Image: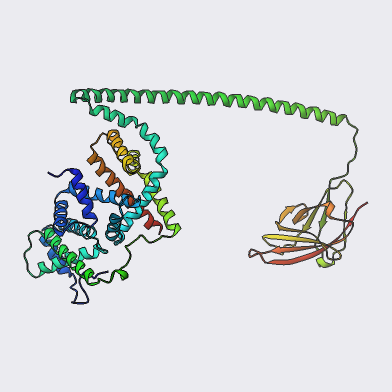
Length: 307
Length: 198
């Protein structure tokens, strides 16, 4: 009777195309009739492909392999896959060795169970089920207690945080009261405003409006410019440009919006005073439509005065 | 490639719906069962042609089935369609060998043995990426099995496989089949992944 090893050798010879027609027919018929033999033949094929990609075949085996295996695309795919699998197995060799040395707890338990007699296995399974049920109950209880403790802990922390906030607010209020008292005790002095203001009104023709004055004292850091709009100046956005009399650009402000002020509907913006020297300026106001197109609405002239 | 039907020499017979229905009816009165039988027969034929080194096993398998269906359509009584188809397949293999023999040429003009064509770098990377993703989708035990079963060379491989039989508590033959099935699953997954990305 042929051994498994002989069968294996015969299968390899078959796969390499080294057998007579009769022998080939015998192997094929057996493979189609016996699923185990078919499986063994497929496994032998996988091992042969692996041996090829690892370079373990002899010269003649290699030639036979290439003649038989590299002719069909399906088999070429198998060879490519074996090559990739080899790369992956090599990559994970180190990590996997560690895993192999330490089999999973479940596998060890199952292997241990396999060695017991049926009565012992039954008793073991029963004990295991009771342990699992007990452990589950303990787990649920433990989780409920933990969540209650966590809720109490959160409540305590919230109280502590609230108390700390109140203490800080009290300290701040006391500081402010002290500062106010000190201010009141100081001699009153008239300080110059840090924001200068300029309101530009539309005239009969805005181009003809007279020169408005913007007086900037040394303490003024910002000039607030407010342009009063006419009812027809209805645009979603506005932009404004300030130029010197000689046409030099000083500032451009876009994305401005209409809003209400004491003077009526206005567009306003702030200009840092250090950008404005003493002299005459021209301000252009534009209305920007929804499509982004801009329309000149008017030109305003103003004079900056500095001491 | 050798033409499975010798198309240059005679008119190719095409499988008609009527002939295919006749084939299915011979396999089983129940059409669904017949379809299962048909697929099993075709799978075996593809295997056979592949084992015999045929470059287009699917085409040859279909040709074998077509010839069988033609015989059934002509009124021939076939008891075991599977065995009959395998017989036709072996005749086709002989035809294939004869055609190859006719292509004999002086040794100096003989082609070099087939080798794997070089593939673009990107394809290899994509394949590896798919394979790694499919490996991650396996269960821990199956991943451990495939990575160890096909790891190492000669003696080292034998040692690893012995360790695995102890680890999984199964005989060597069972382990081998299990590793093969995991390998097939993995290859199918990787192929599908590649097709999805291609």
